[in-house]
Image (cartoon, rainbow, N blue to C red):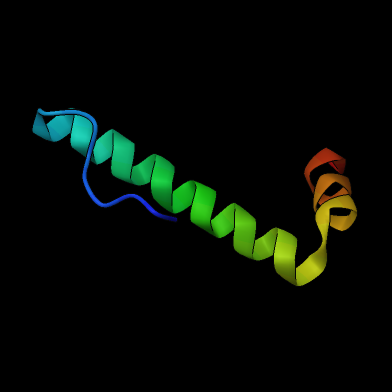
Length: 46
């Protein structure tokens, strides 16, 4: 997603930042595969 280095410095913060990058990457993949509306419907359903 264009990130070449981390913005934070300590290991716990870098770990959190990497987790956010992975989450954003996976959400983009899901949106590209099934679309935004079905994803939102799946999130809202109990």
